[in-house]
Image (tube, rainbow, N blue to C red; front, side, top):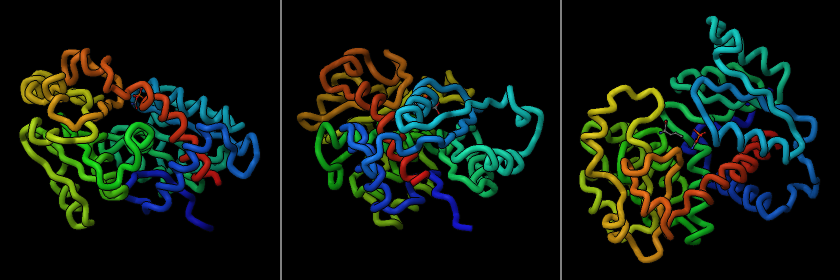
Length: 303
Ligand code: CP
Ligand code: NVA
């Protein structure tokens, strides 16, 4: 049996596949249908397992499946046998007999990998503590809508070197743009991930100073200081305050630079209201593009 087309992480796919997904997403956003069919996923079902909260991921996948003609089943740890200790492997085997694809949002990336290893249908990463690839596919799409092709451009990340930052690192290598991350010392991305980016020929650098990272950048990105599951909120606030994206920091970016944030946002913490609600903010387009990018992902996985 062929391996299903899993969408697990941006680094696990090649540039041509990722570009194909974004091209499909753009076509679907314009209203074009792949293969000329109006409802390419008619009769197909996506199971979504949420072991962490979600607004955008849940609604955009559900609406995306509906728009493609399919259906969803939403499961949480608390209302399934997963919450009583049934293994991820057995859950994968059983769900594969009912549905055509499985999306999971969970803490531990090993649960994602375990699901993919035992499912006979495509598995999609809807966020783990390690990465958030659906988000960054939407982010690349949003950048390109605002600023043109991302290859060779400069993206700056200011803040926690978290799961979203990790997917930006993967994207920088695959889509061939420069990524400068500014993170406090204990909250940088994993050293192994930075080493991978360098070995893969990427232009990814980690600095301590937000102003240095943002200088001349075409896009400035940040995320919450306290991600789901983080417990050291006071320490994080203290360490991350110098990385807040405010108008003074944005002024160091290139003319026409856009601001992005995966949301949910905390105004006055990682970003000021003047920036996120200001003229350079692309956050609502970015949130909308979760829908379109994921329709491209679903069409590829189930194509
Ligand atoms: N950005 C994002 O994934 O949002 P949700 O947590 O609301 O799904
Ligand atoms: N880094 C955040 C992203 C939320 C979409 C978290 O993991 O909570």
